[in-house]
Length: 380
Image 1 (cartoon, rainbow, N blue to C red):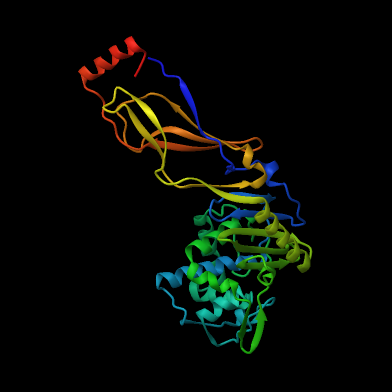
Image 2: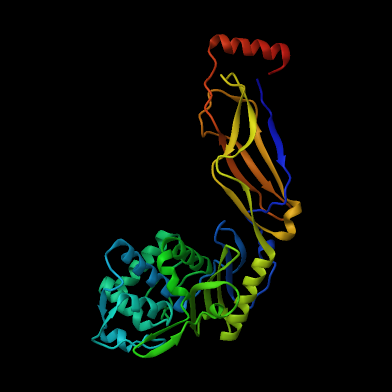
């Protein structure tokens, strides 16, 4: 017996594609040399420009320094009240500073704020030496962690982002680091939203420009060197919906501030999230051949929420592809069909669908009866 592939269109809705074509993802222009916007819930890339081109992260590096520090606090290896000593190297480091004093011991919580609020190069060296003994050894830990997180194009050579030709990353990798920070260390992420910190009677403001605008920002980190230009990794939330932005290579502080705000505004204005199906939801019933049951529910294994351009809603089509009837025996959870989400100018999204229940095969007598019935009636 030969079964033909059968398409069932189960719903036509205003639904968006999860994966965009490059044309759709570049429907906005920015002066940044590299940029990417990620929807935090769905993981969809809403905008990208040279997102996989290697670049210098400058002080956005400090997100990884803080990430490793957060991990050790969560594991119990360190506490917020522990202290690290300040070396001559840390005290004398140039660039942005927390203004620690050589020979002092500084609390971990103060060092966190010195890194994420004040962007202190000295604070990163104190932390790196306290954890790994030297900044170079700590940089190796940073690169190892980057690889573990999937930051495949990232190499760290120091804890601060001090210029080094081998100290590189990409916009996409920094977005991965930002997402991992928010997901894995929510109890410490709050420090990134603090607008100022005072240490040794010196008050410094957070350099993240979006914290001072009405865009819903609550983190993360700026960066600047002559080679990298002005960059920002940021996260914003509006109406319960979080986005992550990385934009680098702006020519000035003002351009970074205004350009980042425009990208975020465009993303929220142009995109929406739509929940298609819930975990274990039945999409269709599929007929069964030679089974103890005539049909089975076909279900989706996990919740499915999709990001889409609002203007594309009416063009979306959702259908189910399956070979039917499905021959028994069938194991619960076995892949039996495919959910297809498609639209013009979008790459097609395909999601496996599975059997909601198990079905045993009929015995010899039952199989014979089914065969006779098929010959006489052409099927069930």
